Image 1 (tube, rainbow, N blue to C red):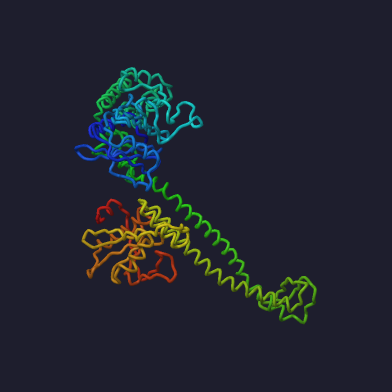
Image 2: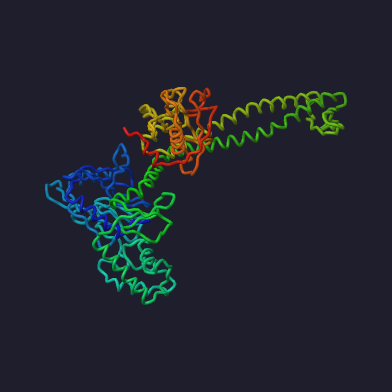
Length: 587
């Protein structure tokens, strides 16, 4: 859902309670869609996130700080110059518009006290963050909007800032609820009550409108034309309760999660519309709610943007290998007819005395088959019968050699394709720039990415992730193929247990026994970790193979992370990321 104006009013009050009077300590711009302000006060430092990402635009205090680029963007440097050291004096919201104005008191180059305003507009794909000077003119913005992009409202340095065009809607803060109910009931008769509310009310999202309909009609799907006097009075009552919550900003943060534990919606009251279709839970603050709701989605989006270069390399290499394998398999199918070539040579050799020269073909009895049926053999009229026989033998030997070579080449190409599949899996699990750098270094070593001259050599990998089973066994999980090799072939002892998902890409997992006998609980938890750090992490049940490390070997010349194993057992595990995090050892 989109963050609506009523929810933003609660965010505004939360920010005022915790950040007014704070000074800007640092400013970061992790990417083109996000800004992070470090606000210092007597109570400590709070991190304020301003995101204009189309599917997760928001304003809130955050603990999930994304990695920053080595070189700050131009806008970030401008904001540092103008706002670092400034004091947050006020936060404004025009009615229930989806924007907040942050007023910062600072000193300009001449030593005069001025107020600069940072406007954060939270409007889906039209979201923006705009710096406005003391004269009301735009200094710069995250997204500049020129005449070719919009004919209604320009966002360019040097021009006066204008609020977004107002909509013809009623505001809960200033309009009597009975007037709102009258306008709702004046909508088209066939429109549902929730859609009518959405078209009439300013700053409320679909979940709020659906909830008002749900409570007004006692869970029924009522149309405007079906509104009886009793239903209208119930509508006035619940609109009054909603207006009271919004005016006082005394709502409570609630999030609805589906049975698969995926967040589906959030709002500032406890929604009743979902019934048993979702679990509704209360959060500690509105900022915490937004972090929980958007955090994983934002991480995936950030990594998708940053990994585009590597993804293009992997996709190109995979497509090239797939085309190569298809072509080689077609050649291999043609080689399957090699015995026919040898047979033609034998038949010609056995009948040289009967053959005439300068003929395009000859019909001969096939003594290889019962009844010796006649077979027609094509000839080259320019060659003698003996030379034609030798030509068929030559093509037979060529096809036989090609079959042997193609079988090896296809096997090697499929192994390389399987290796690239493991790198795709690494990329899908990457959580930061360090992970991407290690994947890039691995691809450089394997020759998929050209090493630039003068580029610094990638430092050693960080080492495997460490976990501790419930009953005290140490478990290590490789982050990428290079770490997998180090973990399995160098760190693990022969008697330790090695785990890997069956027939799907994933990390190597080693359960270190240290002379003890493994418990069934430790084996199950190690298998669960192998499932969590694999392509099957979103499945409900994953097959995991495990064996002693002594039975795991690496074929000579094979790619990083590629091993073979024997004497294995199979256990089925359910991926549980929350349980995995509880087992993680933090350093």
